Image (cartoon, rainbow, N blue to C red; front, top):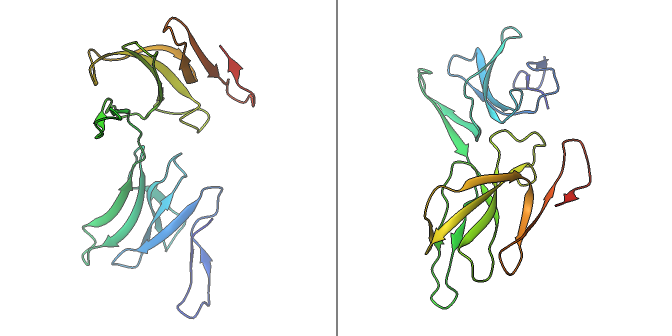
Length: 189
């Protein structure tokens, strides 16, 4: 999607952006010479600004979260925006008692915890900082942590690249999947 500007009656339309990026949520600045907008031209959905006078465009934010512009102050000194973050953390609950307890709170998302019936080891997958596949739950690192009650007794350690871990009932073996970049089928390990 490209950004366009036009007169209020729809006449004189002019394209501000013309590329393969996904541009949306335009917001005029107070001086009317530039437009803030959301774009994935830097790889993730960040805020950008485009000149309504010439063909220049430049980044405003850069982060691992999605930003969406909301409003600009009259003097143009403040831009407000929403920052959306999707993270997953591990939780534990005693079904008889209820009420969950958070186990992990890393900046990266943690998925698919697996443990043996009587074990204290917890295997899970942690999303990588920059997913090469664009799918954080597939392009993950398997982690192993030891639980002391409902918390890790020490920082979990990386054990292998992979996803969808399953621990054998006796806690001695691990089954998991990997998928090399560009390959459709997963491999069982």
